[in-house]
Amino acid sequence: MHIHKAILAVDDDLDIVSIIKLSLRRYGFNVFAFTDPFLALEHFKLNLNDYDLVLSDVRMPGMTGFEFIVKVREMQPNIKVLLMSAFEINDSGFSKALPRNTKINGYVQKPVSPKELIKIIEKCLDE
Image (cartoon, rainbow, N blue to C red; front, side):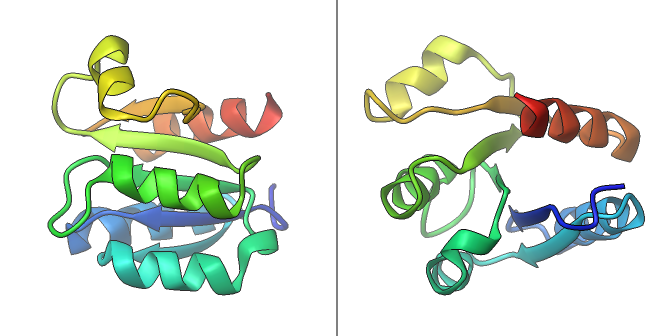
């Protein structure tokens, strides 16, 4: 169990973010879930040192996952970051969308089962 591991999850789809939140909590993670990237950033800013990992969708209205991750990294350079997308994930395409030194720890292809998501998160946190 990862009772002390805190995750910030952001996806503009309420159903997806709710499933992520419930699934991860069942596995002992402390999850804060948002459908609005601006509110998520505000919350992250106020709780910078409490998070172990940020999980963000790529396509969101108002702010892309790439823009969101860049802002998160500016505040907390060492935070672990996973990007999610329902579209094909391709490293070179993602690399072009991100500023040069913005590191992504991994990618999640949606739809993803809770079990698979846990595996990806645990692997990322163990690195």
